[in-house]
Length: 349
Image (tube, rainbow, N blue to C red; front, side, top):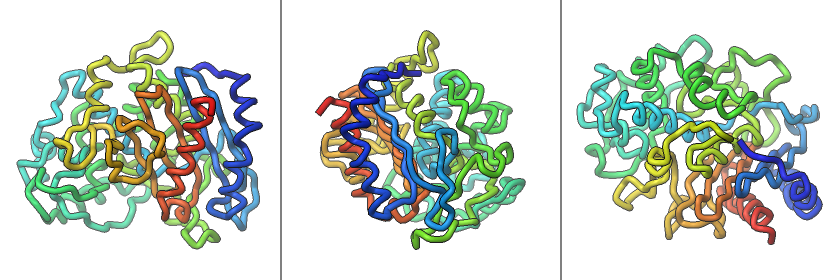
């Protein structure tokens, strides 16, 4: 939850709207939405543009976007929530919950930090109703590049395996689990993993890197843990505000402070700049998607569809950047620049 600081929102809009419009004007994206919270207050919100370069239907405040791998932050938080409830531990072997896993040494933390050693396999994105065959395909095509923990290798499907763990442990599908533990308590009414509940016109599909055509392969997808959420910037930043408020949403506690510390703590011995929640900037910013102004403790994640979320506990600031432009995602410097504008307006520069 956050309070809306109308005065700062108006002042920041006057000072910064044109800086964000430039990303649309320069055709990096046909649309852009930005939301920034600072010290528990929403201090900026920007949303302009159209569905695509060929479909000039304007996007609106409730238009839901596929946020790509930014979804991993939420899936990871749900894993930590079950850890907090003593339903599992991060060092548990995945095989404990999923007998189909071939390697008994792969732990939940290995999947969270992309240190499992599993070689990424390119399977078609599962459509509605196709998640079980997709998971069976993942478990059937597991080859190894390294022993668990020995090297970093980005393994996006690992988060859908984590989804499978969440569902088997909780006895609930991911969407109702997320709604009950996170989305509803945080007032994230425009956020869902499930496309089956969305109607035409309520959401937009990512556009290809050619910036012209809609990537129809990302429509009508099954719920997955790695890239499945559809949301808005003002909804997602509520999640960031809760992390910054040490697990509180208004007067309601969502996570213990210890769980928040766990999510923000670098957990790979400094090797891969990863926490159980997501990427951490650290002193060297090996990911190159954070602002130069972000503190080393900043945690976040970008998404293939031109989205990014970052949470900076040192400056008590979080920002969400949403578009549907795979082209913009092609150069993470775009996220660095957008995050720098967001940091400056939050800090009153």
